[in-house]
Length: 194
Image 1 (spheres, rainbow, N blue to C red):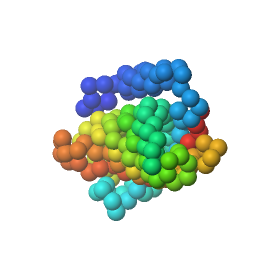
Image 2 (image 1 turned 180 degrees about the vertical axis):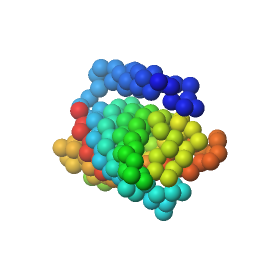
Image 3 (image 1 turned 120 degrees about the vertical axis):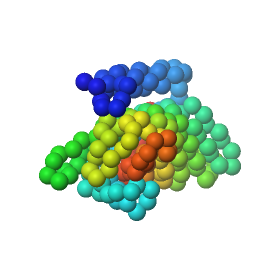
Image 4 (image 1 turned 90 degrees about the horizontal axis):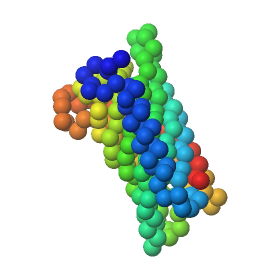
């Protein structure tokens, strides 16, 4: 089944995403403990207070992410670069109709710790590409399925490597097409390092 307005079918996109995750997972076999993470997310859609133009505040979200740390720069502050692949599922009841949205993302992520060790508080930003399976979700009408992906997060890493974070995620076509209403959600995330 072809997604309207898309050159890719959902099956092809899922295969590409799984292959990309496999490629990330196959990166150096000598990875040390803590160089990889599974991140499990739960959250909800946001209103129009930030970048998004209309509200999807009633939508729920669940997600899973795989992240591979490919650069760790120790110094006065700790800076890490991660490659991250993500899948998010959203569900919404809009005007009595059940709607679902599947979001696939690939992006580099910069994580900054204000101290030399990768523990305690950190800030994070990620920019990449995302594919949203549905252009219509709640009152939002996207003009493209393929979008830019942006997130900002703040979190806390314990000495045992367990991490919790809060993330704001935004998706839009970056005005490569019109309209560009934006699509936002917030999530609470649990990172499991391995």
